[in-house]
Image 1 (cartoon, rainbow, N blue to C red):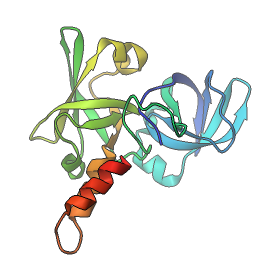
Image 2: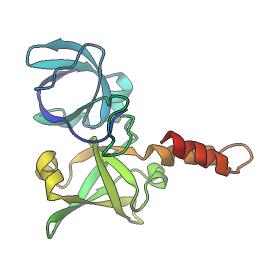
Image 3: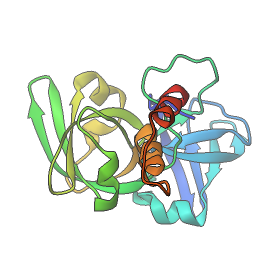
Length: 204
């Protein structure tokens, strides 16, 4: 599990086949889970100044792997009992979106992201979402499979968003509770019971 608060921006040393080699101050152990641009990956080699993670075929097909160059967001898995300042994430990327517009708005910046239609049901105004592993709030949802994020200057400084351009593809993880509630609503009798909702909220 992760929180969507970026630990560090690591530098890509190489990405070949199914192995991504990163240089970072953070020192993981072999077998640790670490989110790279929002995707939960396993550390398979650790050495002085960096570590390597392995990507499955499904991960390579799902993620915006073209961004595994230059700097990337990393976040180690959370420790039970840790304070959760973002929101709970699994590191399971649902889809890739594309930044269609960037607009400055006083002390913040609006990013408009378009994604595939089948995940829009999990995205709601004022709901949580992770973009490239960063915990953010959805400010608005459009009718054209587009949603708007308003990112404050602190987040711009602490993440790679200040370097993002129109046309960049980004990894998206929708809100976990929204996904679970939707699946509960698809049960055989078509009824979502309040005790199911209570149980999900308690787990969240």
